[in-house]
Amino acid sequence: MIASLVVALALQGGLADRVAAAPDGEVRLSYATRAGVCGNGRNIISLECDDGSCGRHRMSFGSYSDDDTGCPCEAGPARVALQKRGGQIRRVRTYVGGAWRPAADAQVTDLGTTSAAAAARYLLDLAARAGEAGHDAVFPAILADSVTVWPDLLRLARSTTVPRETRRSAVFWLGQAAGEAATRGLTELLDDTTVALDVKESAVFALSQRPRDEGVPALIRIARTHASPGVRKKALFWLGQSEDPRALALFEELLTKQ
Image (cartoon, rainbow, N blue to C red; front, side):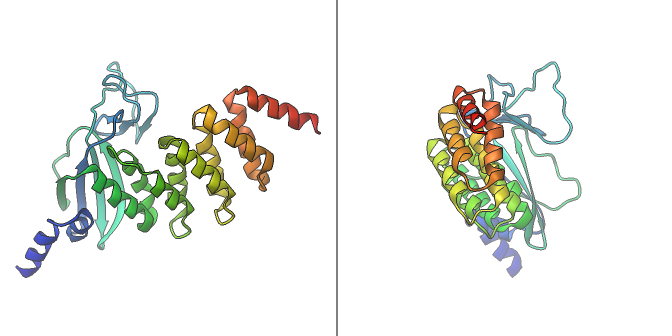
């Protein structure tokens, strides 16, 4: 009885305390998504919802093929399922739209709807400490409504204490979701001698996804001056995909020097 009372009180506390107090099994939470995010409630999440249909920038989880309805989407909420074993979060699954299915035989703790800020804070903290599960905690954090996540993503990308895949995920979403300030952060990341080479190469890719006026000048500087031949080669590759006249001018300059 005393143990049950302790759990019940903890489940009324902050989100991290509520997740920690939940028994092993599946822990569910929901929160509002930022503008433009939609999903089919199962295995499609779009970051550019277009009048109720999936936009160009979308992720597919598992097998899915478009049908005649054009991938209908619902604008939230985000639904996150945390798989908990041995008191630790082992897996994170994310959905947008739809509703939870009744649990068949697994232990389920539904924490209901929480604030987007609290959800993002919890997920970013989880990404920093959850081992391999942290990789999957980054994505749902960037979906949260009215939350600025890029400073945390930069800290994750620079950290030497989190798994490399989590750092690479942070770099990717930094480039996708942040603005000019994050682009400056990416270039600083590339100059940091303590950051691993493959993380820097992910940062180069993230820069290639930014608007041209932000990404192309940064990539040109990297291609000209970076100490790593591998990073310079990556920058040149993505410049080649940009079809930007400034990239062509750089190619001509480099080739005429041979």
